[in-house]
Length: 309
Ligand SMILES: [Zn+2]
Image 1: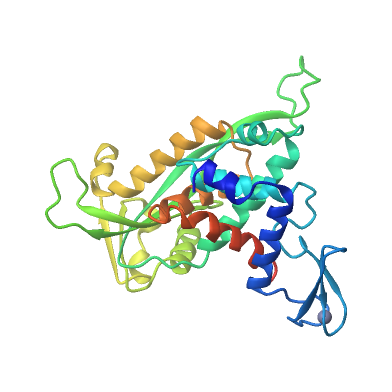
Image 2: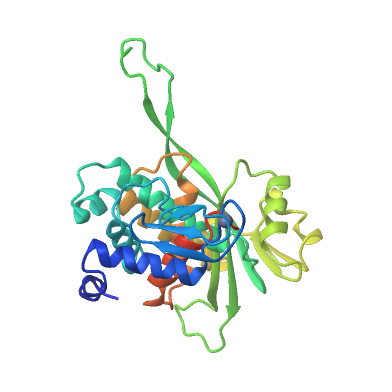
């Protein structure tokens, strides 16, 4: 769906509300009070009324839009722009496109959408052959420390540090690959911010995210040494850092693509929000062949499982 198609499908706020209401009907509204699923639509109250207990559920309640005052059309356009752009879109750009006065609500809306995006892939388990490595992503940490006595007024100094990210890519081999091409095809990518790079932390993530019958490829980092006890096969490549790209090509490509996207679009990412940006990046990579379906799927995700998941 391009922008013209979007404007034709959602020309004004009333039609956006109607589309949202129809989708909620289709996805089934569940009464928060009694669990009933049959409702009357009260158009004057813009609410669903439970047939059993008369409890009212507003159009936004229970969805990603709960507590938001932004128009429905903003949400639909934001979902459209976040899914139709190849890389991503910054908050400032979104604010400009929507013509909204304030930055904060737009920032919040985009993060709520990213949270829904992240939920889609949380339980996905990677299979077959998996490349595993760690990446370090620049983030800004806010601290209250005074670093210089001569600058007492600088209360919130942003200091940059690196988020530790575990990166996993599932791949399948390609026969007859050409020179300069990778010998495998990417299937799925997962990126997780982790507190530390200890063996315990990494093993816990591998257990949760990777199928026990899989083959895992890593470099010679010591925290990977016991992975063979968790997965069927662990292939360890002890090579100089320069050659790591050739033995683990997909994780390195994904890490550098993500870093380039973040640096070019989002600039400085605050600590605590890195996972949201990684989720958005992975969601797009993992659904790179979905094209037009991406908007509808994400919209349903934003409506459907905010509570009942
Ligand atoms: Zn009820």
